[in-house]
Image (cartoon, rainbow, N blue to C red):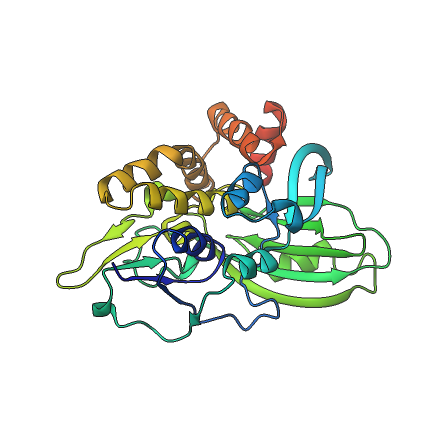
Length: 324
């Protein structure tokens, strides 16, 4: 069986590593990124389950951890978290060790199956109806004095400042209802410890559609190979929090579990990520500027635990209001 994986980001690299040990010869394609780190968006933060997923590949997850945080300030309130900041660039490089990454587009007819791991681009699967794609801006900076680890909510999105080390930080913003760069500028975070030394900066896109609204996840083409989606290309990103590292890696495992069962793969994705559908319904309420209910706050409270964030119900309701 001849396989092509399109996209060598986090999901594509992880799937390549898992598949290579089973199948061997796999063609991997990626157009690359003009950013300094070679990936876009860089997304340094991840959540519960990350270390176990990395360990499956034979790599030591401890070698990629840059920082761990047990709290952050969210809209001025101290929140308990279990957040891991990791070296995404180096992990992808190690997952792809020995791989030959081609930068041309494959001849579809030469493959039995194509895996779409192109993230927000979703280059090989059909467009999604009512797709939600958020634009974000990101900066990696050096500071002479410590910056606060925090999140600021607003405009159906948020700005963040995460420590990468004792001197380096990742600062960024993504939102649906305003220009992210303007929001970050108005917050003044890039100047409050002036001068900040900007190591690199970029813009990126994140799909917040959710798995249940991102079909089809597999497409058959007359006379051509089937295209199976994985990771962000099929909406494996939490619509409210934007976390997609663990869910993208998990989708790659599910693809292998149901390698010869298209229907089984789709059903497994819907079971695994059914919690995302609740977040998408809350997201739609925010987009339509509808009144929020207690059950919406319960969804945020419950799902936040998946990423190691403990939010009391009252605060969850407050934070949802701040997202407007």
